Image (cartoon, rainbow, N blue to C red):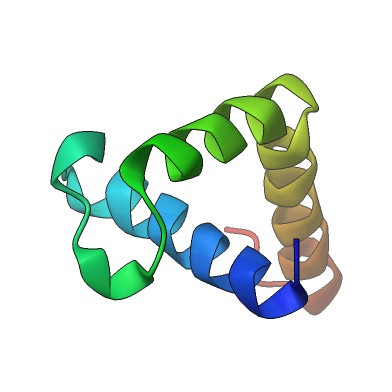
Length: 68
């Protein structure tokens, strides 16, 4: 997967997860199919990516003293 395509997929996943949009209603402007985005989300979830990302954000905020 090219880094550009990966970025679009990442943005599509974040859009679905933060907007409440159903996977099947993902706007075509993301340039990838809802099925592909959902497969990547599932793979990233199984690989622990979201947990690591969340931990990294919390660690960064803590280092800045902004973790309240």
